Image (cartoon, rainbow, N blue to C red; front, side):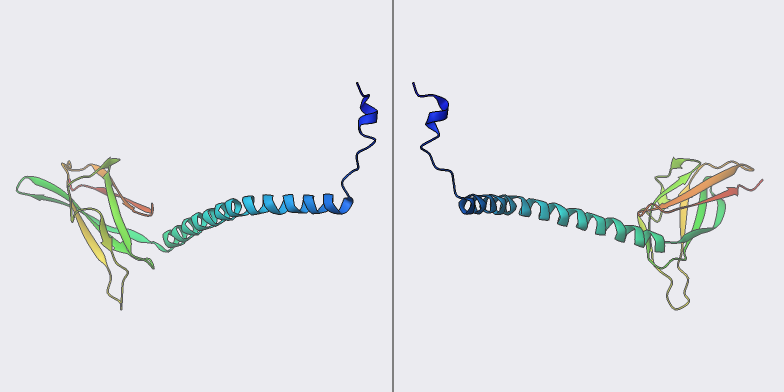
Length: 160
């Protein structure tokens, strides 16, 4: 049996130039493997950020107002008419209307409904007629919500 120290005496070490080349080659090989993965991850997160910022920019330009609420009773059927005006820089897409925290399904015109931007001084107002069993003298809270999440709330009292 040969002692441990004697086994290494006859062997030569790798030259510093070869060891440097091996380390540089290993680093480049790792870079070639990791770079496509890291670059695709960065590109994906950048595109998601662009989508998020652009949608928030559009939402910042979105402005609308519930101008008027009218209570109607026609042939025993009661309606609440909500007049919504687009006063912003972009079109709005009304997706939901709530009365006293209850989403309304019977809305005319049907939802979702787009209200375009005012052009050449022509105001864009849409009347949403909601079938609702309102009671005389009670106050109702009407909330209009758009696809971008913007909302406007108006309170109105039914006629006495």
